[in-house]
Image 1 (cartoon, rainbow, N blue to C red):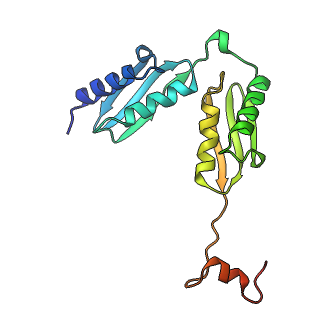
Image 2: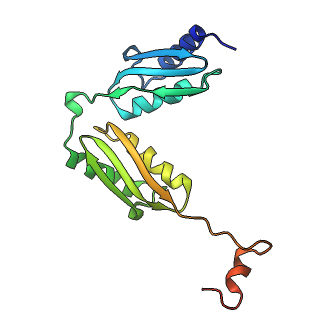
Image 3: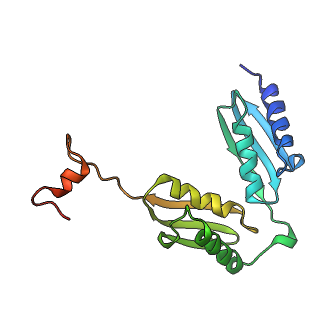
Length: 167
């Protein structure tokens, strides 16, 4: 098992290896396999990359990401501009069922809601939004559609084709 100090060093080296991350703005503490990241970064994409870089390190059991996103002045956008950009990226992403998603923006923070059929669609929404300029964070309130389960011993086609079944 790695020491707390070794975990800190390993995470810092991993952060420095990532080109999107400005590691000098990030503080790292480690205790019993739990790594806490603090400080500020310029984008949500950078915050996300820092968290995932720390997760890749052997011996890290959990990552607490307390990094704040402070968008540089030249990248600040109005909530209306951010909303328009988010709607556009969702429309252009083939993995996102954009017609099922509602977006709200408040001071650069995105809230997405709706119901999708698959978990990968829910994740695709976050992935699409993460790189939009000016976004400080995402709250994903998207629900998954309940799975239809056939009665025991039947397949779905047979379950829906028997007399009295809804078609």
